[in-house]
Length: 86
Image (cartoon, rainbow, N blue to C red; front, side, top):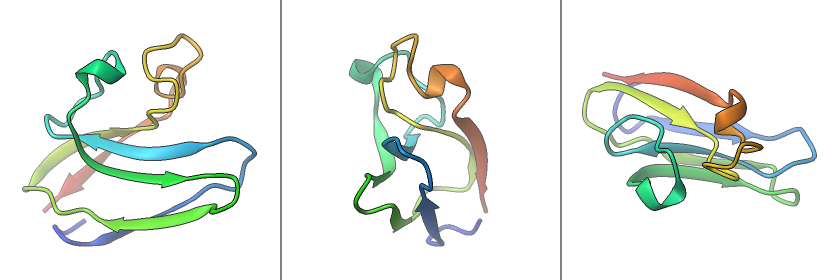
């Protein structure tokens, strides 16, 4: 994406989710280690949300921070991905 592009998050499931990107571009081990640059949250009532991604050029990991650090946590169970900002 280009810096400033809008990213839209749609949750069609029955669980809370978010898309979180930390300043360092990685996935932290626990909530205490988060340094959130961007977070788009959805809940079971508002299943769609969007935000601009205003980050410097680079490649960042994004993750779902729900239950971060817990063995049942979403990021721990594969809800991670990569986004490149140009």
